Image (cartoon, rainbow, N blue to C red; front, side, top):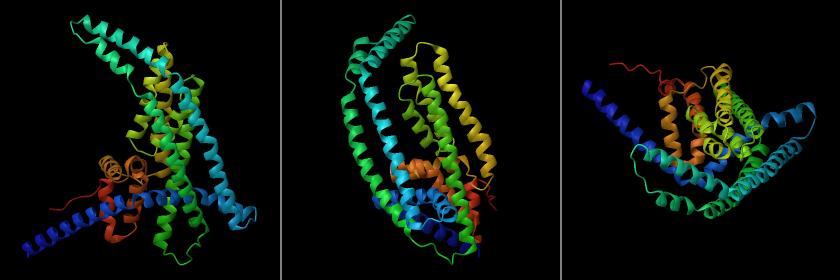
Length: 336
């Protein structure tokens, strides 16, 4: 009897591993199609309340409401992209100044190390810094921008088809519950991330930090990554701040003011809104970042937490997969 149970466990485990590998292969192979589709689905969730408002309160036809909502997205895109482009151009124009400041800091650092009888070849370091491929970086940014715009057009087309599609009238209560929880998570996370990004961007702008808009935008995106996202967002501006400002107090404000708001929003406001509905164990978060990052790259890292949270909510609603939901939460109790 025990031997039969053990064999069943081995077979089940083997099938699970094979299925996981197959799913990972399919996700990776279909990345050019699936990533825009997932983003389009998330956009649909975000604009659904706007469309419903136009239909229910302004008596607008659904097609018109969809068109207005998509025009709003395109309008925001048209506003944001030039800001990012101008910030990058401004930074590249100041690249020589930053390079000189780095060289000065290197000289100071080498002098300090020599006081402790630590010898470092100054010329080697200076030559390495002088040959930084800034023009190549600029070309890469422009190339990626063109690719990003083409992907954005594809996402808008997919979103259009999703929004114009008819909603099913025969969805089961379980799936309605899942959809409502997912909508709540995506919409709330988007709002809290946007608020965090705007606050951080305004702080950087008010303190005079270059690339303030880009750092604010990165804060918005990184806020979708639990735990490590906020830490990375706070650390990213430090090198620019150190090179730009000689006043230590300004550098400290650039570090600690955004960190304070990250702490308040991420550890007090969001838990009160979400409760335990989307609770994921830290190890689950790390593994999901690794998995989705390997499958879909940087986009996968940004989507890892929302996708894993959606999977956990889906597992929670069905008895046969509830143990998997507990495992993702880190609350499973293994029986001997």
